[in-house]
Image (cartoon, rainbow, N blue to C red; front, side, top):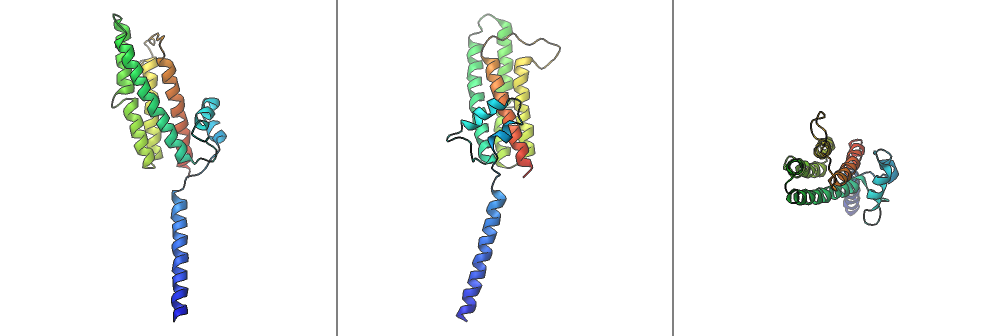
Length: 189
């Protein structure tokens, strides 16, 4: 009788261990070499620099960790860009075109429906593993940032911005491009 209970306990333990390993592997994210990710973006060397700057380097990091990291990088840079735009508005003085341009950029990048709101939505969708939604939200970050620099109407010439804003915007767009590639790989899991 003791043998029967011992055998049954061992069988239950094995089944439980198998179930736990299955559940863990279901939620584990694929590890992908940075070079594979970066060959899919517009600027592979920029991508490699960003992903390898992750503390300890990105070697051996899973896609979810890299995705979370790049979202944090974008969030920080959007926050810094908002500060820059507010400073540009304050220093635009008597130049109504500059002030108007920067106020429009503040709405496009800093507004709730702008890049700031969209990167928060991207993060929420990423945490929920809604990678199709991540693509939608992240694409909106790029669109809003691009509208700030180039204007929403292709017929109107872009504002001749000599500030650091175009450089900040380009940085955001390139990091979001990495997020889009990572989410595409995660859709395949």
